[in-house]
Length: 427
Ligand SMILES: O=C(O)C1=C[C@@H](OP(=O)(O)O)[C@@H](O)[C@H](O)C1
Ligand SMILES: C=C(OP(=O)(O)O)C(=O)O
Image 1 (cartoon, rainbow, N blue to C red):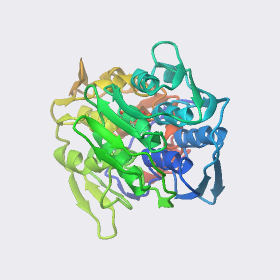
Image 2: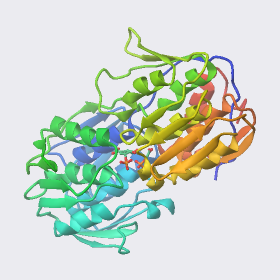
Image 3: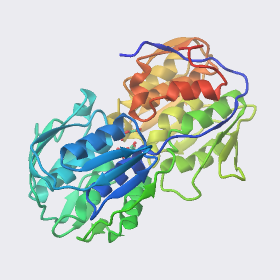
Image 4: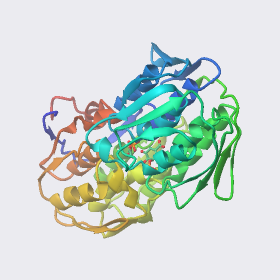
């Protein structure tokens, strides 16, 4: 447990240009595909944070060579083998991307992690692996800890998958499928959240020369080699959310450097969403995204099913808006790092908003703000949401803010930099 964080109070307009480390989601995919490739790959500026370091550790344990070269990672595939126990921490990307890779290994691979990881839904993935004749020992509900007993090869072929609880179930199967004997013909039984993340998987696979196509009911991946590939990892646009939100909350201006022209990251939708909330959004001549806040924050009525991971910061903005908001399409957030609908209800209510939980979302009505001692819920994005609230709500503290190590270990130093403060002044 890290000591509680008194969140900086800074209602005056911020004016800052920030750069951000690599995308968690792109780093995870790049690592997995480099591990399954036909030669060595270089990852330039991968995210170095708990989720991605644990992913690298898991792949190393399976026989992949991953070494540092300055800020880069050099990945050299090896013969995948067990027996091994993998620490997935609290990472959904490891929980869902690693088991199909483990199925290609020879030997038992046990996946375990934090207490909360053991509650994160995964039944759809385990059922799909079993349908492909992969032996898996689990608690009967598909949750960690479970053991994949690989034989060095996976039959592959047609499989029906329930990915209604997480898009990562689809992504995990597609990422490894080119190495299955018959590839995969994946048909969905129901809906899937976070579609941009599945598109990110498809795009990343194609960049590695994998033949993948959308079908009527899902996706088909042909069996074949995964080409090795050197790649520069884009900055994490979801982690841009709290920094850009600071512009709205304080009526200031924040530019995020190196905003990609084209990307599959869901954070790219921040330009549209923040504009809906009253911000002025523009591209800068040198490739940044500049967000300027106005006199007030407009409420948001939106289906966030495609961009679920943006919800905590957007919900914090809703609590500071000039009218009631309604966020829907995010029932699956109950299975994230914490039950995010419950956590947001508690946090936003504590600072004075009136919150109503819906089966698939939240209604948020701003109220007179009040100081509050908040919890991080071991959730990086809840710490970031609290940081946004604390800019204008005086007296906000967050217990155990170290949760940010999941994707942005130096978040608090960066936040102090945004505000033109030195860390230590407030923490
Ligand atoms: O594939 C990925 O990298 C991710 C997919 C999404 O998962 P869910 O579909 O479970 O929400 C997203 O929320 C998560 O942060 C990252
Ligand atoms: C849901 C998230 O993470 P994970 O990859 O662990 O699912 C997230 O980062 O918001």
